[in-house]
Image (cartoon, rainbow, N blue to C red; front, side, top):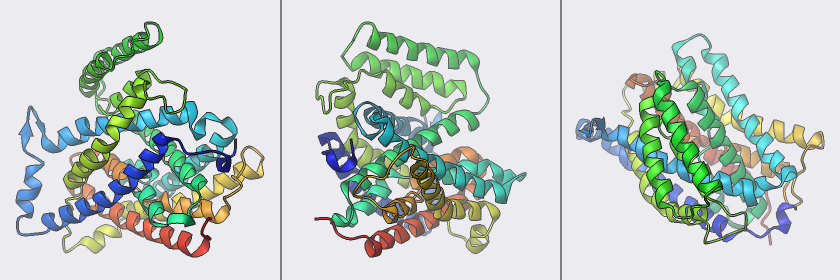
Length: 388
């Protein structure tokens, strides 16, 4: 089934509406956080996030606990795409899958080429991710210049992009591993799968309680605790019937949209974009790590997405939707360079304990995301025609 023959599901419409609004709110929170961090109360503002509660800092609770809920939503969205979204049709799915693969590998190669063998090499995962909220927010500003199929393509691309980032987090950014706790977390996951597949338990309560336990065990295991959110999403019963409001997965995804978009992500932005812009900011932005991040997001993303999309179509593996052309794909590739949330998240893992390089990396991410978003907006504004 082609993109233009499909009607957007209510779930996708709600998702797109919340994401575009969230993007605006994230911009506001980022500006506020930057302003406060560089004001006379900057030290006090940054100190708030380091206050310890229950054995963890506020920042830790946000990045490990609240973001686990964000990852749960990502997992639910990915599950929906796989069952009855664009990724459910193998032929259609291959285009955003190839595009995401290019958007992961080329930025990583750019960063690796500049930082191989240095301590900054750990940042190779930073330019790999795409921020769904910001990318869809820019598309929303373009109105009828954006075909529906481009929104679906970019969403599927960003979800696959995030999946790649999640795998990278699990494999490469794991601290000291505790096999016992990891096995415990996987045992809880297995139990939830049994409740779903064999006993068909449709109440969300046992899954959410099991998810909390799995999160705790994953936190203690050394594997980043947010991975529990993804695992929980795939343990919750899902109905392949489109927009099945009785499906636990559908109900939970619908419930989480607004809290994630308007509470969790803004709090994450406030806690993680308090970047102190010092007198050496220019030197920070010209370091090989910063250049790798900026080059990866601004250049690597569109080149990788465009290149592998073209290869997939040229080899007959996939096809362009009838209402899209290569200008649209390149524009989507440019918007894919808006890393923000996931890039900042990976930065905190890659350079844990090194505040200076984290600060410089975040500055590079913000500059690259702003540049990619602006160029992507202008490209689609100037080189695409309004749809009827």
